[in-house]
Image: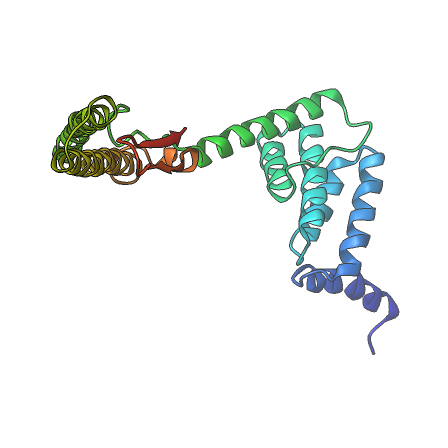
Length: 249
């Protein structure tokens, strides 16, 4: 028959070993943390470390991971193991970058913790920041279509001016002189035809100018201008030889 003393010895040594191989439950994590805090208040950091390390093997929330790693870092720093303290603080800040140490933590340990926080923030910034080189020169590129459309603008304006002058001269002759019926009809047709031609020429110039603007904005170089451009409208009077297109930037 086994003696009571032997049973007590087996209970004290075999059962804890069996428990050590299992993952702590949520209630056990809370108890382990309480025990670790008691050891830390008693300045028995070497006894708090295994309690915290065991608690960290459980399935924890981010908040629990942050707190337990912070406690472990404080213990290691208090024991003079700076490298393990850094590793624990890194784990705490990885779980919660805004974590702060408990009130009353020594300034030396707090400085180590803040140094780890700053180093981690710099590393994160270097990983997430990328410099994108411009794909081309900042200025506008000149393409063959620019010459075609530019020539159409110049030709349209020139034709509009010439035909407008002819139409105006015909209208002036009709007002200032007396003519027979045939001459009046001829001057009237001249005024009307050249007036229409002038309007068409100005319209061609405006269309070419607008096309060039669209090429600049959407095709070749400056898409960011698209949201800053509005065309207010066009005025093409039938009785004269003028046209106006207003484009606002």
